[in-house]
Image (cartoon, rainbow, N blue to C red; front, side, top):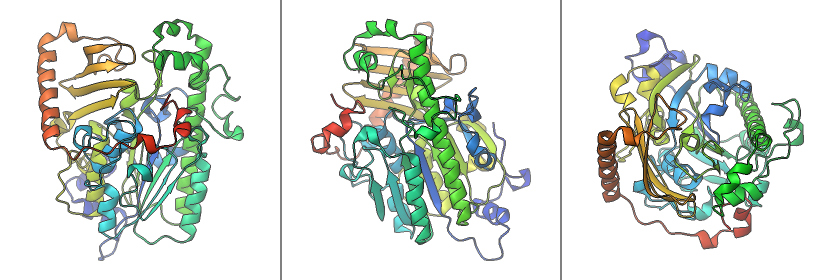
Length: 465
């Protein structure tokens, strides 16, 4: 279940005592920690070598991984950025914050993690290169400084530019404690990297066979020409995977540079550092590309690494966890008591080895996507299965139920709903019950500002036609 990063004798101690011990602190309590949350857009967990991938896509962060806790089974609440980051920021399931449609603005009635930290004395700053995580959609709530990219969406700045801006910020120096949110885009299509980084994975640049939103990809996804899947050959998929992996390697190398920068500024050891993704990416696993087109695991399974302040040894947590768990985790590490009714649960007990293995393994997981042009579906994971109700999708499916064996079929290749009708019935009943409960506790209907966004910027990423 857990290889804890701390000695067994510490398992029953409070987080405060553990942090004091690992920091070898004096009688004075430790200062509030700096907190860094890094989101690498579209990074699926199974393309990192720390999750068993065959390519060296992330050895640059080996030292970080060796001193952090890796969560083997972390899921986003949605397979695309706006609803997923809304859940990450609020600690709420998608049906409660309702920021689920393209162009929806996060309602200001919700308290974000940045607002909670800001209200308790943290200096809050963000750098986002994603066109969805922006002021116009209210994702700047709680940030004292919010640095966003407003250029052409497919020409997002490279991650090294983000690191450079962070270096300038560190030189100020920033008031502490601080909360820093970084959201990079290189792993998002079109999987761009600087020329000098293009040979890191293959020893050569990836071939140009695959073109992001080229004729094949656009025909299948946007035009419903599913017969074009037969034209997707090995060289096309190799090019796609090579470009994706090259972007992953570039991003993790830059992440290593960022950690070195923190260490140079004596900010690394005592910080809470979280590295994750907002969603994964479809690489033709089920005949699709990009993200937001399905609720398959390749779009939802994201990496998660957490380094507590003072942590020196790594560990692995196998229990099922979710991105909505990060908000309460941050509050607990920060020592902030909150009356907020969050859907997530703190991961600190799992990190310290104090969690209940049975309850942790059955931690609730609800997923949803409501992008009308791509996919409208809801899912639940429980009892060793994952059930998905598809209301409609780009493939022409209507009101379809599918269920997968989580242990026996992690790639979700075989629909076993026909073999287990009783379990399907029970999981559907539970799915409807939970979403009905969440709907009753939901916030206001978000304002849709799609028409206010730069359509040309978004068209290059396939977000609008």
